Amino acid sequence: MVTKRVVGIGALAVMAAGYACGGGNTPPQGNDTAPGAGRTAKTATLETGANVLQSTAPVTEISMYLDGFHAAKDDPAMQMESHHYCDQVNEEFAQCVLYDGNTADARLHGIEYIISERLYATLAADEKAYWHPHNYEILSGTLRMPGLPDVAEKEALKTKINSYGKTWHVWMTGMYGQAPDALPIGPAHLAWSFNADGEAKPEMIADRDKRMGLDTAAARDHRKDLVALARPQGGVAAMAGQFPGAKPPLPGVQDNGDTATHPVPRVVMGAPKRQ
Image (cartoon, rainbow, N blue to C red; front, top):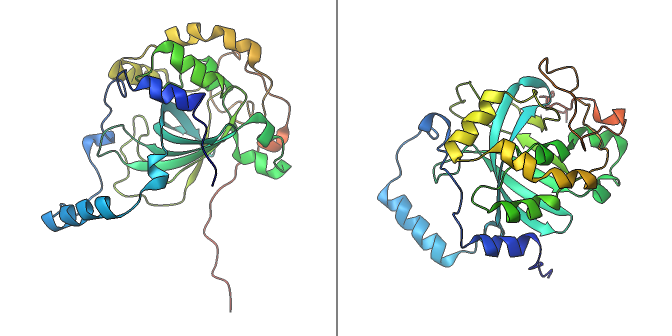
């Protein structure tokens, strides 16, 4: 059995217990959940019994909450806010479940895996088209850990400089300015990071900041010294030219020239195999 570390981000999670647990609340988009009959007393009773008798060990390992933005790699107009609840498995790998809000009725709309720069370097060339870079998200101040004091948030995100994420959105909810699908229908969409000012809709970021009591500009200023740690990353230019309002890159956000990151993987439905 692997014993998880109790330092670094784990220690920050403990320290954060004395602070607000999430900033402002964000209900699921449209203030609705999935269609269906209401929960019955029988269901609630069975759930209570299951909570007593069954283990939920993987879920209890989730200890980090991050809020940020994605675009679908195959459709730059498909922009969404995601609330990440993550398990830091070890120093170089985290796994996250993504929701369209941070309240009890939020809808699970995706997953993300986060790996270190070292692990990314071990990937095959054609695999790298699935993994987006994180430096802009951190240095721009748009990736936040709501509820943490600024010092703790910065220390936690410092460990994610030069990291990469592989994200699939499976339910089209949380998209800014678009009505959510009532159910998770259709194929999954590979999500990508924003990598320059003007790519993400400014009103989407402003809406998040107002709703959750955050200040993206202040966070950016607070993280300026992290620029010295940033190295060129694959995928920064993977969606270049698809955002008409994109500004010049921020200091510390630079593409490494790897064009293997540019293809757009898609989930498609194939014909059934013949027996």
